[in-house]
Length: 274
Image (cartoon, rainbow, N blue to C red):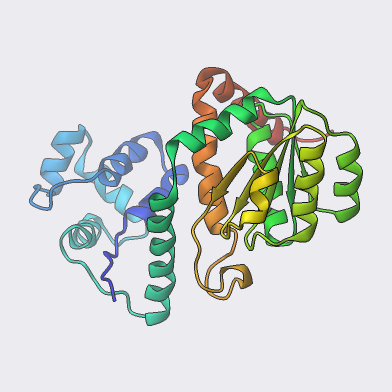
């Protein structure tokens, strides 16, 4: 069993939006990594940050601690003393997540991610097919990429997949999501798309030879026992990691414009309906 550090930094991060600008400045200092041997006395930190010691106390209390002394004691402990998590169930879940991340790092190929990004850029229409938990990922992918300028549609209904196949052409890209690599509706959709000249990508944890003929790209994601059943961790997790990586590459193709578009959509979502 691995040991994990219990850190109060994630808790500080969760509180940032509730802090004043001055308190956010203090929070940012503690969110960053520091040598455990640093002098964290209130006098020294107040000098470094150009704030009063009273401000440090108010910050600590705002974060739920009795005062700066308690806050800094727990903060220093998190820097120096790895603590085993108290529950085997907790460590099992976190170990599973870490395994997924390690496996993803091992199977990801930057050249393939670049090719997939280019397909997203070059095709006029993008459709994302998925069923069940993969359908949920399809909708998440649509939501995220639309916000930075990709015209795309998520399709999770069998009948709509069949109707959509009729309007496909060489200007289209169809992305299929299937953990098992055996979701019939998704695979049939990719076959039909290929016949109509569309570009095709399959995201799966299980590659088989039969899918090679009708997929321009096959992006594998990490496999964990019973992943498709979601027994221990969410089956969407490995796909979402890959999508986040592709999102990062896509974002960099025109970062300024895409960042502005993301901000515009954020503001649109904040507007209240009349």
